[in-house]
Amino acid sequence: MESGTALVIENDPTADIRRLGEWLTAAGLQLSVVRPHAGEPLPSSLEGFAALVVMGGEQSAYDAEVEWFPRLESLLRKAVRYRVPTLGVCLGGQLLAQALGGQVSASEHGLEIGAKLVAKRDIAAQDPLFGPIPFAPDVIQYHSDEITILPAGAVLLAASTHYPHQAFRVGDRAWGLQFHIETDTEMFASWVDGLDEADELVEAVQERQEDVREVWQPFASRFADLALGRTLEGTRPSLPLIAR
Image 1 (cartoon, one colour):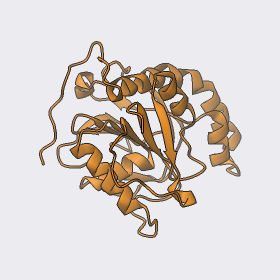
Image 2: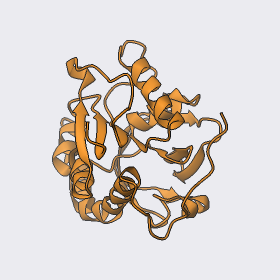
Image 3: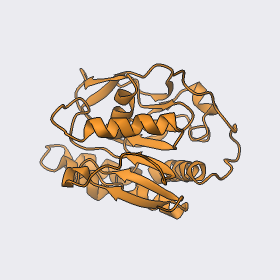
Image 4: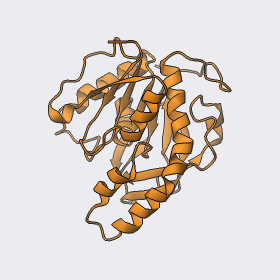
């Protein structure tokens, strides 16, 4: 495995890496996609990989019937322990939190869906990935579960009114996002097909695609820089690790 390769875990065929994958490869990372939902085995270690990216899906992080989740959580713990740059998106972020002692449950506020804004917290200005992000970036939402308790030592980076744990960091190289940054209009349309408000939701997501790209493609590039050992301009060189 080449040192510039990110391991991508696709938990659901409807939630592939899509635009995020394009941004990461444009920034110099190669992608090795593993699809456990199709029976492909997860590696036992991250040796030879420059980064780990865990995508979303329709499953719940706490669903005991998803047979590969325990192995995936073990891989996420190894990533944090060995400081492998890691990014979890939606379900992937929930699994990252749960793997490190946080809690995930069905949200009492129900489904959060469509083009939304999240609010960056002040401490995020010190974060190497979130530092340059504007105060209220555009994101795409589609989830009914939420992280109710963050892992011990995690840093909350972004929040919203009813779903307070929108983005966080554990250690100095692992990030979890509750929202989607990879989703194009076609993918989102497939998620909401059959809903009464589908046309309105899809139109709003289409209108925000460029706004999402302007914020999150540079974010993806900074993640790739970190994975490839390149200097992150305008950010602090290191951040404190979580207690172990």
